Image 1 (cartoon, one colour):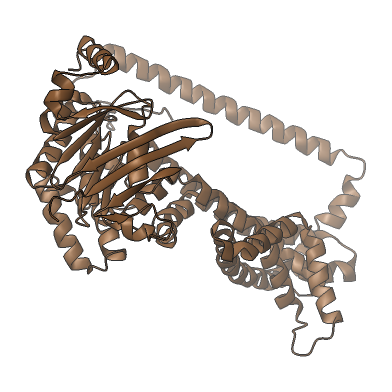
Image 2: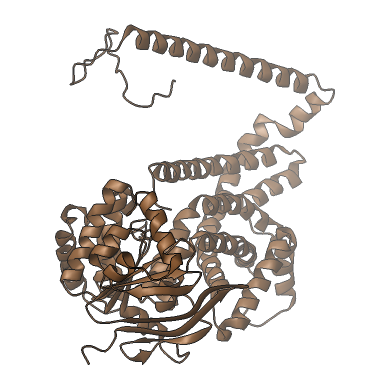
Length: 250
Length: 303
């Protein structure tokens, strides 16, 4: 049971209008592992994550969370989302709420945790992510890196089974990227199961147990970080990696 | 008068600048620039004052030299009738104020319900959505005065048992019907202005559609729509004067009564000025709130 995949996708197809964004995508995410989705912009990384969280309805195929098919129209979508945490590229914090209220909203309203207990856990998490003094601040008073760390705390506050990270450093200034990636690394050490779409190749290589290279909505290559970055089999992957090296990103 | 961004050089009574903590002494260049700006501001004020005076003088002369002015002055600006009308008009105005408060509250509640009804999803709510849309379309298009006549004069004509014939209650109902439609649209625009990513974030946390609306979308929508809402309330405030057509003795009707007796129109002018005087604080409040919201936005936000 413990080795059964947390998330499994089979032959997932997704189109927007006439364009096919995901084609026949298979994916398995084992417990306590990190899967990195890499690929150019528009290759389908974000869409794949949004499908996993049922923010987008897939056209064909199926997705299982802990062995339960969540793409069944009879599945309780709210219940599925309760078990998956998401962190967005643009943070998507609620601007009208303090940091503490942002974090405790779901525990209190969705999971029925008391205010005191929810706030205690929130403060604990904030402390751990180096945001102890920011509980009562409003999001627009924080730097991008701080906002993104708050967004991570918000996602963690409900103790999700799976964490989806959608290019969470793409909107950050270079000097703020490190503080956010550090958080992800420590989450991995704690055994959190994560799927992340990222442009930070150095980080992906460092932290990921499994790397998937997406191109044109297809998983073109997958394997361990050493395989995909070290001995890419496909010409397309090699070209992608070469361009990154030339741009100084790898 | 000058808008100084960044640090200011506070001037003391003796004209010397206070020395800031870091020992900064403004350069001669800066002092010269600020002297120039002050001189320019003084010049601008003088020009504005002069131009206002000239405009006022021209308007006054045109009005006073109009051929019918002596007669107009007598029938519209009679001090005697004004003194007689003012207490009665003020007495009537109390009714307008009460109408504003009650209708204002009812309009906000009803408008919000209609706006929410229009954003509900799901097949069960189809009739509700259609009804809400039809309601706003109808009452936004229907002239208020016709709405008032239908409700205030038409409802009593039905002679229904147990239904009020009180022109104040019926007038208030008509006002609420029309203004709810406007306010519903204001709320709906607010709801739609909240970026979809906010809803996505809320749903990702496991909130249901209703919870996302209640805790994430509506609070932001209402906050953004405060200026247009206050604008509609100012408008409602003066339109309470229209209940007079049903015979309710408000400020307008009080003036009307005196005009009918004396054939002098001064009481209308008095009633008009009283409404303006009542509206000005409301308008200022609107401006203040809007400016405050703008300032908050300028300080930067993610959205």
